[in-house]
Length: 477
Ligand SMILES: Cc1ncc(COP(=O)(O)O)c(C=O)c1O
Image 1: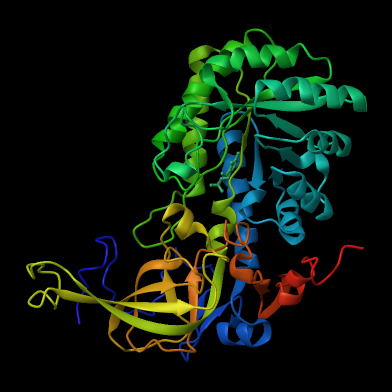
Image 2 (image 1 turned 120 degrees about the vertical axis):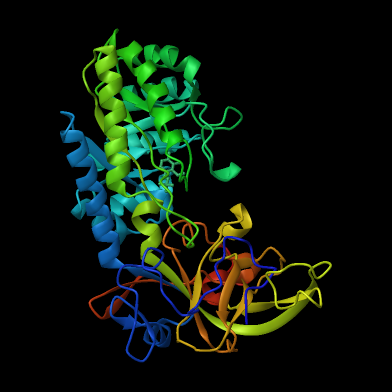
C-alpha cells in the first residue's frame, strides 16, 4: 500500500494509522495496553456505553492547565515590562457554567458576546466585574442587562453604541467602563470568514475614526474610557498579523494618551491550534513574549507609560482538550479517475484510478459545522488499533448535504467497518458552540473526563426535546 493520489500534499501516509500525535490530541489521550483509546482515564468504549454517540468529550485537566499556562505566560511576559496582563477566555469557543468556573479558578476573566453567553457566565458564578461584553449588534436589553449586573467592560463596536451604552449607564446611575473595538485593517492570514479586521467587514470602528470615537466616549460622564481593542481573526499561525495590529493600535493609543488616561490595551485572541500534523501552533509563551516586546518597544519609542494588556484567547484554551466520538455506519468506496496515470505517487499510476473510502458516522455538520463553514481540516482515529494497511478516507456525516464532511482527508486502517468507534481530535472549540438541530438531530451531550471518571456537563437533546417546541405536538398554553 502507498499514498493515494487523491490525498492532499499535507497529508502524510502513516506508518501507523492508529498513532495519536501528542500535539493534536488532549493531554490525557492515550492507548491502553490493549490499544483502546482512552481520555481522562476512561476508554472511548466505556464513555460510549454510558453516554452514546455522537459524544463530545472534554479533558478537564487539559482545559485547566491550558488556562493556567496562558495566564502564567502573560503574567510573566508583561511583568517583565513593568505592567500587568489580564487574560479573558473567549466564551464563544465553548461556554457552559462549568467552563466558566474552571476559568474563574484559573484566575481568568471571561468574554461574552450575547445576552445568552452573559446569562451562562453569571450562572457559572463568576464575578461580573471579570466579564467583558462584545457584540456588533447589542440590543438595548443586552446593554441594559450588562450595565445592571456590573459587567467589567463593554466593548463598543460602533459609533452609535457610544450614546446607547452611555444612556443605559446614566439610566442605571453608574459609570460603565468601555473599550473601543478598532478595525485595524490587518488582513489576518486565515480563512476569509475568520479574518475580522479586513476593511470590508462588520466588526469595529476604522482606525482612522478611533480618536473621534474615544473623544465621544470621554465626553460622556457615564462612561469610563479603558482603552482600545483589536481582534484580527481566528486560527492564525502567522504572527506578523498580531505584530502589525499591535503596532497600529499603539499609534492611536499614544495619540490618545496625550489627551487623557488610557490604562489598558486589548489585543484580542485568535492563536491557531494544531488540527492536523500540517499545523504548527504558537506556544503561548512565545505569543506573550512577542506581544510584550512590541508593546514595550512602542511605548519606549513614544515615551508613554506601558498600559495594562488584555488578551482574549478561546480556541487555544479549549480546542485541543476536546474530542468527538462517533459510531461508524455506511462505508462506501468511491473510485475516481486520477488523470493520465502519470502520477508517480500512486500504486494506481498505471490504471489512472484511485479510491477514496467514504466512512459515514452518526453525526456530522450538526455537531461540527467547521468543515462546511470554513473548509476546516481535522484528524481522526479509530478507538481501536489495527495493523491493516491505511486507506484514504473521507469521514462524512448523516445529513442531507454533500458538504456534510467531518474529516475531509484522513488515512484510516483499511479494516474500518460498521460499528467501529471513531474519534475526531481537537473539537473542543467552536463545535458544540456552533451545533444545530439540522435534520432534526438532537445536539449530543458534553461530558468532562478526569481521573478515570466521566460526568455530564450538558445533557444531549432527545427527539422529545425537539418535539416539545413544535406547537403541533405541544400546543402553546
Ligand atoms: C472579539 C473576539 N475575541 C476573541 C475571540 C477568540 O478567538 P480565538 O478563539 O480564535 O482565540 C474571538 C473569536 O473570533 C473574537 O471575535
